[in-house]
Image (cartoon, rainbow, N blue to C red):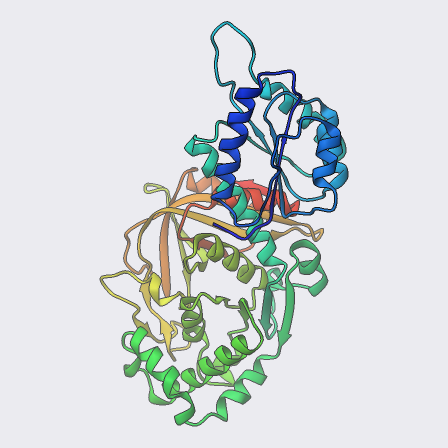
Length: 446
């Protein structure tokens, strides 16, 4: 059940079999009431354009569901589109009886009339569902579309914080406030990394006791890290966490190297891992579009996501290994090791997360990409997360894909995709595809 406002428009003409149409109307309305607590639905079928206009007058909705309870010509959809700019689902009913006798509904022909009018009237895509109210696939299709619409709505109220600047040569993750607002509705906020460092150093041991206990309860081996690094890591975690809570931040893209190693003397990796565990999507290397990709995947799957570099392929297993220095959510760690803690593989200071990620049968790879001309695109691919141990120092995950891995990697490199990809714990391929349609962003499904 959701609070999304849905408008149900059961259209048709009264010259078909009205008892069959009435039965479909009653069942359909009952189904839609199970999906939202904010359904705008008429008390009777809208069997003329005046009735349709009268019901729609003064009403708006987040989603409009047009259903041919019987045949209706294209003038009905034309009228609807004059009154709403909301996304539209057209629901086509199956013919209830095929017995050599009368055509009861002729809903499918009405759907073609509606689709013809929609293509002339609107530039976006109409969503189409074919089936009876009792079919599982109908309910599943509605729920998938609704999840995508809710995701679009969340983006319009989302605050994404960029902490510091992308390092030289990492401009693929750099976002401009107007670009991201125009395409996604996201509110981009920025702050310098040094401000967090300075605030962190002011904190006393007593001020960070709660955060210290939380970190120690989640990060195995944290107490073995240098005591100064332990303290300064927890200080930094508190500053990040407090700022996020005070400013209603949903995702962050944080600068990491070299500043946190050279100036603060303690990496930010563990902080980002704990934030990811809190379901604050946290990307490193100030990758704003990586953080946005993580947030979208997290909200659709309701699980923390993982941002990693593709670092290795295995043609025999048809797998890609994704890796990063150590920012994965503790809850994504393999059960046999837990969320181990260590030091950075290059800088040799900690704490960083040090583990392989747990397996998952149905996963999705995703990236919000940006072309050289400034337009956006989605990378989407189905995957399986294999039961593999840590592959390299840091955090890593091995995913099996459907396409042949070698030519796919060559294609992605040649097509200019960014070197950070998100691994989502769940099959949200359909939702991401629909979200791309809703945002008018090209989707590339591999």
